[in-house]
Amino acid sequence: MGTWWKRVAKAVQNEDEGVDKAAAEEFIRLYHAENPSAGSVRPRLRDVLAEIDRTGSYTHTPGELAFGARVAWRNSSRCIGRLYWKSLRIRDRRHVDTADGITDECVEHLRVAGNKGRIRPTITVFAPDRPGRRAARIRNEQLIRYAGHRQPDGSIVGDPLYAEFTDQARALGWEPPGGRFDVLPLLIDVKGVTELRTLPAEVIMEVPITHPHYPWFGQLGLRWHAVPAISNMCLEIGGLCYPAAPFNGWYMGTEIGARNLADTDRYDQLPLIARHLGMDTSNERTLWRDHALVELNVAVLHSFAEAGVTMTDHHTEARRFMTHLEKEERSGRVCPADWSWIVPPLSGALTPVFHRYYDDVRLTPAFAHHPAVAAPTTDRT
Image 1 (cartoon, rainbow, N blue to C red):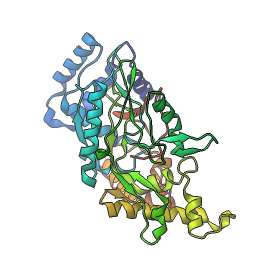
Image 2 (image 1 turned 60 degrees about the vertical axis):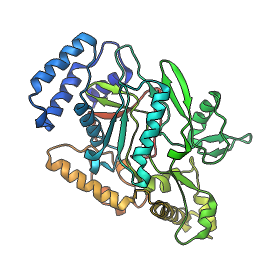
Image 3 (image 1 turned 180 degrees about the vertical axis):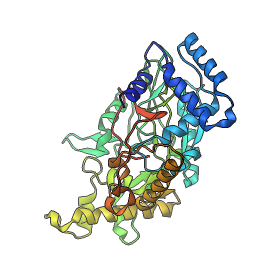
Image 4 (image 1 turned 45 degrees about the vertical axis):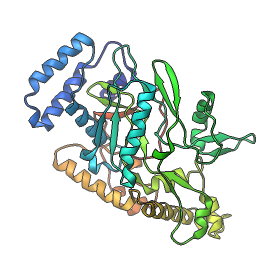
């Protein structure tokens, strides 16, 4: 684990001495081992090591980039939805390095990934860091997130998790409406300057939250975006860091219903829902939180289904993860998994992933947080 972190940290921090040759060699050998059609590893390895000697870095072929991105998803120990890692669509945009160009490609990413509701796992990869030359970064945790507006009385309208980010956007000139679900602009770091860009409304797919049995639920005014595209992590492949590489799967219902809309430091909707349900909230023994949480999750799953937007439930996804685990074991590979993230935040003990231990190891390629931009994510994509 120590060696893993040192290698990834070196890639993420863009150290001037160049790419770690051992990391590059390890990846090239892995690529050729799992892709026999690529031919002998020796000529490619010779070229890569020579390029590192000459420039301090090297360039992945399109095939290597696609394989590395997919394996980074395969290695994501906090993600329960890895069964379909081979289906990840790769958008190679390493030539795009301006704020306008990156914004245009993020817009296209949301359009392609959104796919009119039939969500496609997609990654858009921009330029990698080079020795002494830091590539562009996207500060947003996800391409679509909601603002948190600080009020004079200390309260926050919107998502409290993004109050500080909202302050940064305002400082750069953003003038939001001040509502509960204002989509944040993109903040893109390019050549030492932070640029602000807004996303066009036509690619911001959102789902209003209603309930199949309680008409009042729609009057709560809740909604959530359809494409969970994580955008502030480094894609580390063979010692190279691609600092801007937004990627998405599709939502599992509990990410929204048991975390984003339910957590007390997020939208904190359970007390309100419980009151509408007529429950006694003065005593924890009434299990009002549990009842409200289940109904909120029923509403989220119902709403995405009604809107025709891809979403999975935690029982189905847990079974799929066990299938993925079995496939990986049959392939002779370790399947890294962090139990605290793999077990759903609702009815965990009712799912098969609860009742066993996992190998919480660190493998590369990987997705890693940037030290200066890192922020905990509640989504398990």
